[in-house]
Structure formats: C-alpha cells, structure tokens
Image 1 (cartoon, rainbow, N blue to C red):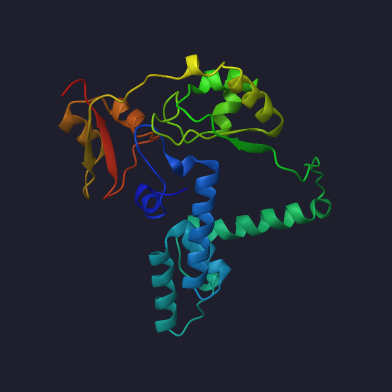
Image 2: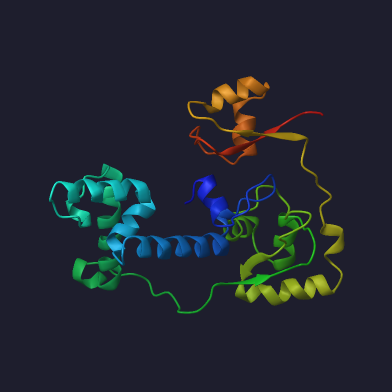
Length: 243
C-alpha cells in the first residue's frame, strides 16, 4: 500500500530479507499514522484525507487550490481528480454502509467472533518459515499468509524474528521451542552479492536489467515486484553472481 519512498519515510524496512510494507502489524500502524497526518493536513476532512491516501496529498491539494482559485467548492465531490481516486472513496463508503446494515441490501454475512485471531511470538533466532509452520502445527500457506513481509524462506539473520501465529498455536510453538526442537531448524542463509540502483526519471525495469546484465525476472524477484512499474528515487536491489 506504500511506494518504497513513503514506506521508508514511515520506518518500514525494505531489503533482501524483508519488506515491511507487507508486514501485517507494521504496515497497518504506518498506514494509520499516514492517514492521521493526512487528516490534519486537510484540516480534519476525512474525505480529502482518504482521497489523498489513494491519489497523493499533492494531487488532492492542487485540485483543492484550483477550485478555490476558480471560486468553486473544495469538497471531495467537487474536485477534478483521476477516475481511480474519484471512485476510491465512494467504494469505501458503500462497503461501510453494506457492512453496517447488510440486511438492508438483501445480504447476510457469517458472524466473525470479536476476538484476536493471531498473536505475536518471537523465537529469538533466525528460523526457516516452513519449519516454523511445522513446529506451530499450521500449514505453510497459513504461515506465509500471516507473515507476508518476509522475502525469503527464513526470517532475517539479525531480526526481526517475530512471527504471527493463530492464537491457539502460539503455546504449542513455544513448547516445541522449549523442548529443543528449534535449533536444528535455524537456516544458515546469506544474500548473494548485490548492488543497489537508484531509479532515475525515465528509466524502465527492462533498461536497468539490460544495464546490469541480469534477467528482468531476476530483478523483479529480487525486489518482490509483481509487474514492471518502478518509480523515480526508488532503490532496486540488483543481484550479482559474484563480486
């Protein structure tokens, strides 16, 4: 939900091992902090704050200024914004109303218990995520779904090591560690030699890959990119086969 530069601004670590922009707790906390900032920036107007969360504070600010200069209203629904941002807030408002009163729309949702689903556990050392799933007695898919920030199959060698586990599996996991089942499961992994490239305006992922002589797919995988969209001032990790 954050581009790399905004993620760094809000203290979210991004490296070969981990991208905290996908961390369930850290990214949520950063998102709330950002939304609070935007709310103050737009003088308590949550509609403008949410629009800026999607489209950027500069974009929304300029739209407000244009309307003000032309003597037009400056509320969200009066602004000239991109289609994506114009639709972003109404979709959220629609969802909130449906969830608040599903019967009014002919819908019925399954009840969700008002209690925590996961808890935090820290094994105190680097651990292989697959083996951690085995220790906790959950599937690897569930482990990865709860801990999507890790780029590799292990937690980083110098931390953070903490894992999110279903509440009912935390104690069995701790007991397994206390029984000595964990040490052999610690991974001895190390990142390959790499260099870092600061993206300049006009550069493409294909051009950067060609510049360093690495496949585009390798560059995409090393930076956890689903597509080929990159942004100026973004830092890309370029894996190398040797020094």
